[in-house]
Amino acid sequence: MKNYPVKKNQELEVDILDLSHEGNGIAKVDGYLLFIENTLPNERALVKVLKVGNKFGFAKVMKLLQASPDRQELPNEALLRTGIAPLSHLSYDKQLAFKQQQVENVLAKIAKLPEITVNAPIGMEKPFGYRNKAQIPVQKIHGELTTGFYRKNSHTLVPIEDFYIQDPNIDQAIIKVRDILQRFNVKAYNEEAHEGFLRHIVVRRGHHSGEMMVVLVTRKPKFFKGEEIAEVIHEEIPEVVSVIQNINEEKTNVIMGEFERVLYGKSSIDDQLLGKTFQISAKSFYQVNTAQTEVLYQTAFKMAQLSENDVVVDAYAGIGTIGISLADRVKEVLGMEVIPEAVNDAKANAKRNGVENVHYFIGKAEKIMPQWLREGIQPTVVFVDPPRKGLDASFIETTAAVKPERIVYISCNPATLARDLALFAEEGYVTKEVQPVDLFPQTTHVECVVLLERG
Image (cartoon, rainbow, N blue to C red; front, side, top):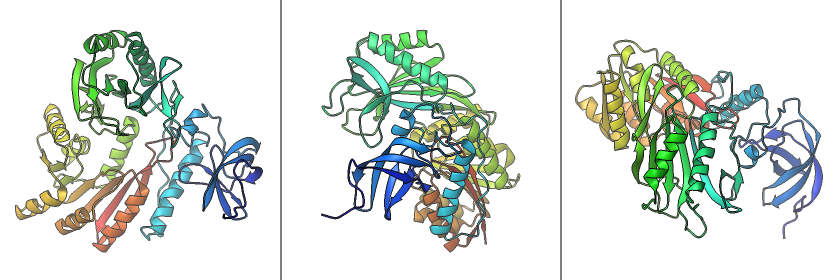
């Protein structure tokens, strides 16, 4: 047995030295690291050790002995326990400073670019109530349908009605939908036994339009009184213009299944972004913070120094939000996306906004861009907005071979961004500017816009 300086269930007083990238306080006991939820640097606390591992352990606060001046009142401790809002106990200006530091750290360590200045993050005036989409698990607790969120690293549901970072209209809709389903005696899904019916309630709301979509994720296709329930949802929440049943029969943590059907109204909702209208279907990717997405895109367009002669590639086009928003500033936009439904949405969105200089293709950029080069098409600016895993090395090589003058990289994960900037540097592209934008206040996530130029 290894001897650790702490034991499980031991109580001890510690000083909090730093914050981890997940938002937990860090203390050291004889060099051994302890991670402690709901603590901040410069605080002292009486803690109880919960778990002891080889390199580090976890503890919980029994009593806060000395509070940080940066601490703000916590709306609800469940926001920390579930990981919904892991920084909600830290004042907002210090949240932004924490995020800037995170980006600086990875650029220095991973990208080996310590000389790059990371601009101060662009924050929100009201950094709460911003999420336009909620995916809420449902469980039966004490005989009642209950909505909330899972405790971190578990599948224990913590009942929550005010999610703090979600649009309050969505929070209210979830409660109403849950109560309607309870009246109709709809059974909650039981994950361990893989039985029961209702798995998740998903709600999307157009930030500008106010249109709402309710998606009921079920374990089986047969939905007794499904259409009737959908009608009642619309009657009690008139903003709901779309009710969809999504069927997920698998024993899995993935929320949405492949098949869906419309129970009421339309198959999508509309919302506006930078004055353009977009249709958003149940599985479409659409940034969850509309107000800050507008700031993000305007920052990216300014950075790209767009002109009327530019040929722009939108390499992760999704439903076309970037390409359609910048189309009236440039000569032509060529977008590609691997998800066929998203490409259909993008084409429909271009048409409804009367944008004629945007063209969308299904497929990977690595395959499509060399084909364009052979056809004599020379992009001057490439926009990339990849998922958290970042870009494939083959994509970076292909993009460099196409030789655009400028690349604008929108990233939701500083670590993969830093890795990719190092690869672009090998291909002769110089990182010119890094601008974080806070799309996810009260959480540890941060979005960045980066300008690269051909050296």
